[in-house]
Length: 96
Image 1 (cartoon, rainbow, N blue to C red):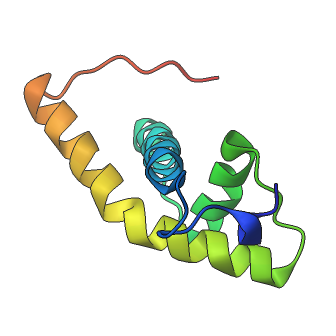
Image 2 (cartoon, rainbow, N blue to C red):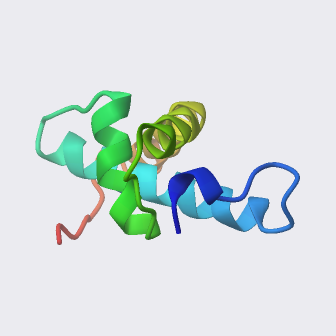
């Protein structure tokens, strides 16, 4: 599926897609933190697209996905912060 065709807020599958998007962004952010690296929203969108099975063939596709990533990134970062606090700063992460 192209990123521009991804579900939006009015679509019945929006909540499921949003959950998958947040999980993918969280995974990438966790990997980047483990590697002591960081990505901007553009790089994060490129990393998240294959995990969600989205094609970003056109500038419109990329713009849509980047906006979605930018919107959910604070949620993913908060999830990582909570996990670190609950685990005392230590948690297992499999790098694929």
